[in-house]
Image (tube, rainbow, N blue to C red; front, side, top):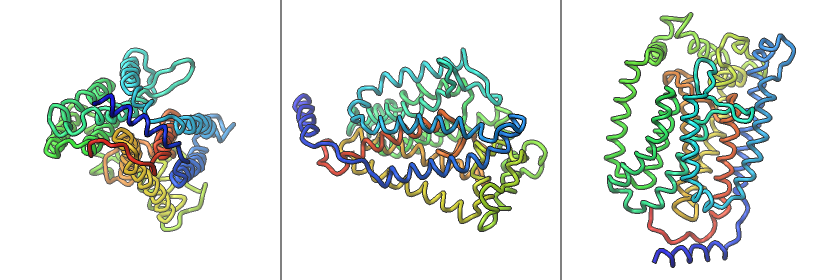
Length: 387
């Protein structure tokens, strides 16, 4: 029976040629990339001049542009790859990502006090960015395999949970709390889409809260972040400094902003002004209206991505697209909340804006996969058990 169903699926795929990608989604992603590169230059040129003895103002922009070009190439290539190939690659890529995460513990390089990077063939990258993608890919494959059984604890909780722990344990050894939190939130959304019973998801959320509280209790720097979040004014020269400088930038922007390139906080007052806190510079230079416009573009791209997921031809494609879009959505919301001090600092970057070559290239490649899935969104759906 399974052989007949697979043969029928293959016959359907041959009878429906691929259509064009979803152009509105493509336009929104390219718009975010363009805005991100423009704001990165504005936010980073003062730091670039300082770091290079005032010899060059585009140090960070140049590196980001190279990674953007790599990411765009990956986006085009991945948009041409059928979803079935990603299905077959899920387990091998998952295994490779675990090996990369473990290699960080042995040969990882320390950057800004954190050991999360490795260098292969002269290229430095962060394996956790690859691990986020492979976890989503494997969850999508498991969703198809579990089918309606995802409602059962054995599959919907134990099955997904084992796959998730394979990634989270190495991250915990790296003390990479932000990645653990991010991947946990994405995993919950994907499990919900797959059909996991809500009561188990609520129990998992409770366990996650307990874990975070215990983690904060034993990790001093994490507890300092919470204290700084609640009362940054009590230590304005140390733990509360970054938050206060971010709020100064946002407040000074007002409604219309100081103008592009005219931020004052980026002149070495606001730490990581071109990375985790780049949105504060956006608020200062573009004002509330500009910040809302950026948020609106993100919202439109996320909505369009979920639309592609909903209209995908099969269960695997639906969950894969939903997971990749959720990854962008969660990162965006968390970054906005941290910069505006609605949440404690987490170290989560703003997609397409924050400096970070690995993240940018991977994000663009992931959006290429969503575009590839969109090629088949207007075709007859494969006959599968409903999600």
